[in-house]
Length: 70
Image (cartoon, rainbow, N blue to C red; front, side, top):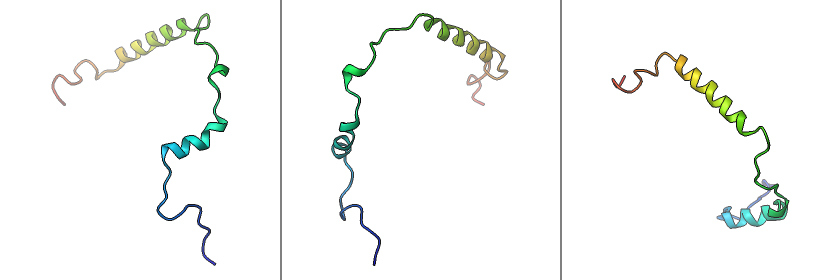
């Protein structure tokens, strides 16, 4: 007895078929929270950006990076 065939020969998964499979499990749009920024959240990104900038300034190769093409 051969292996069980999960798909028909020559059939393939399209975006439409995949969407029909996922649609019953999708979260409806009204369940998503409103796109408001929580208090203290924007400051988090400015702090991490400052840390990243300091790290880049510590990186020894960034000053002559692509200017001389090496």
